[in-house]
Length: 103
Image 1: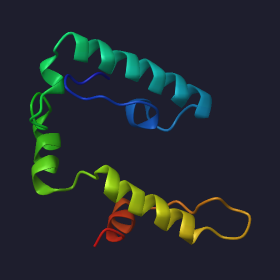
Image 2: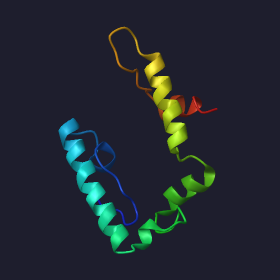
Image 3: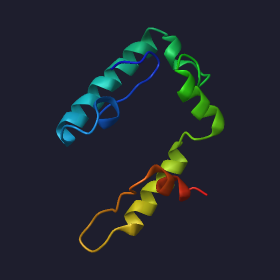
């Protein structure tokens, strides 16, 4: 399902199906779409984050529930730190558990 103003690839876009290669293919296609939108001066790429996105996404932006790159790095490091022997990382099982790392 395409939603105007939302860019997504992989499981976010298609649900929990596919493998890393299909997610990478999605990401490459998504990058091409973003570049095309940029060159077309798409309103989707506005400097105002909530421009052109559904209300529930805009609400998340305003409430601070969107994870920026710095927060993502903290979550990433926490997953790596949680890893057991022989594992690269231990993923969080719930969004609440993941976001708790940020507080």
